[in-house]
Image (cartoon, rainbow, N blue to C red; front, side, top):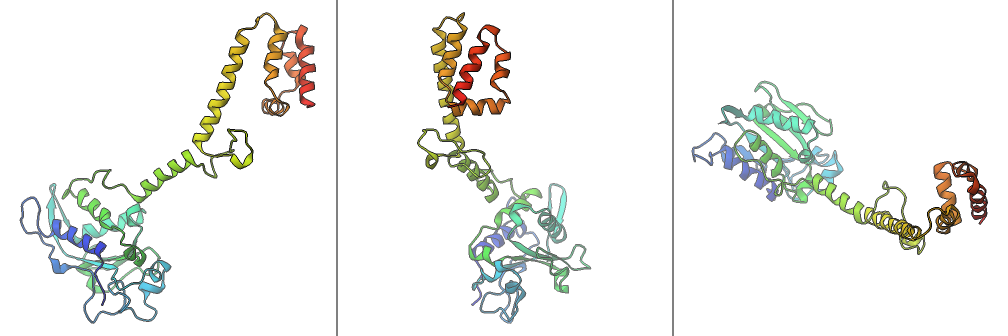
Length: 307
């Protein structure tokens, strides 16, 4: 038999807890249990209120999206909400305003709406409209003048994905419940972004630039992670610090000795890369140093570049 899945039952309980009875005053409100439905009546065939035992050939709730065909089970994947009217924070909220709020969230592409396939509703109690993520239809039958229908892609129902965050957000926005704590309501998008940062820090990524070989053991050990690049940078800074310490013990009036000390730490490959990056030639460097050591610089650089 077609079943009411646990995740949609959670949504139903949430709505009834706040739109049927005011949890602050225990006073009855307008939404009745019979007005929040998931499974269609015994004679209902086809559509999101039916599970695999009641779908029909070519059922739009199965064949129009792979998310539905891959997620088909005995579970229904639709939710109906009937008429109600509640006052909160000095404003009245009803089925019309609820429907418009949810449609606006879907149109805006809010992350917590991605599992909603369609919403069939009436904005004014006179016309029926349908927001369809797949763009297949734009209206519905007249029963939606007094109730709003939500269809959820069947794969999300099969996965048991929690659908309450979106409905909690609505109840919070109209002032019936407190805003959820970030710690308790982190979206999957936020969790994914944090995961990507973690992966970038420790494992690297295709858009993070050149990989480095921090231990000099060859390309097989090259890494693209931020942590490795920081280690590599610190190692290079240690080399520079060591060089400065060595030069600090030299006679700073002995320019040839200083030049020889600097050049001693440069391999032909590293020297060539540095000059190419800076757009310099040996002659250009020599032109910037005192004439008495310029020739020595040119000769030394030329010798090293020749390998």
